[in-house]
Image (cartoon, rainbow, N blue to C red; front, top):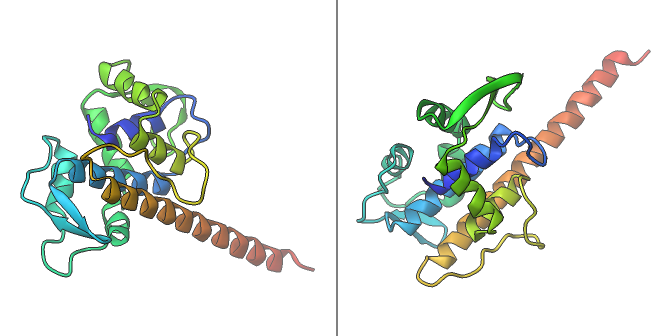
Length: 207
């Protein structure tokens, strides 16, 4: 299992702290994919630009798709641009993939945050592993979960994982910070649209 799949399984828990938005989750999933590619040395970061590496992506279909989507010509793509491009409808892609693999099962009543019938993680070793990673406060997964509101995270404006030797800490921290900023930007857009819609509705209700 990948970090992105673990994050999605946690997001589909039947009793989350609060429902997570599809856009927020899609951005975080794109960040999780990039972090896994960094860990596999399939990519490196040059500042905030994603440089394809020589190592192959881990043996996972969605991660392989992510690697294939990388920009391979200079100037390489910025992390922020990657999140918005790769993240488009990514939550729906993960839902379809996990459902196909039998890791999500339908449940009675309700609807998922993504418009389909309510699904929840099947009781599998993969689900237990994902939950265990979060309960152990595994740094990267815990920070990603906190960014989208699935768990309490570290205090401060920018999330920072605990350092781990030889794990590309600086690159991982960069990705987490950019994911945090992108989710905050998306929330600001939602709030602005809500205010604009309310103002427009008030115009029509005015005597």
